[in-house]
Length: 200
Image (cartoon, rainbow, N blue to C red; front, side, top):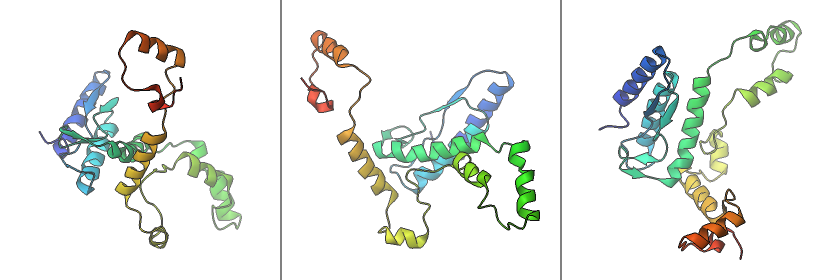
């Protein structure tokens, strides 16, 4: 099996199109990689297979984050990095909305015939930047000079630092203290309550 191959993306895309033809929901294992490490191969394979399936209409794309070596390994840092890839894939899938508002004829007229000369001063420009642009958490879009000034951050090192921060500070709150205590009364739980921010 080659989970990161173009063929995997094509097979998933074809299945998604067949399911759309029959008006059936469809999920696929796509967006995995044959890489053994979060490197260029891993990102590229994950991106092109995910986008291929997503733009073909797959309702759910699973095993698309954190998985390596065709599902033989997993990487917690990659869960964070892959979130950028999945966000970009979702943005691509959303496409370009074309209607009277997005065609912006009034704004075009104001800039081109109203001697403004640019779009930076229009309210629509800021609105579009907030609604149409995808802003990744880890991918670097700074200029080369800014990148150097920031000591040339490496994306994997940023993900490792973020993973450490999450694991050391995150305390789940989806289970109330009352339920937690009831579970502990009925089952032998070895993780102390203090380990995840509980007291008592």
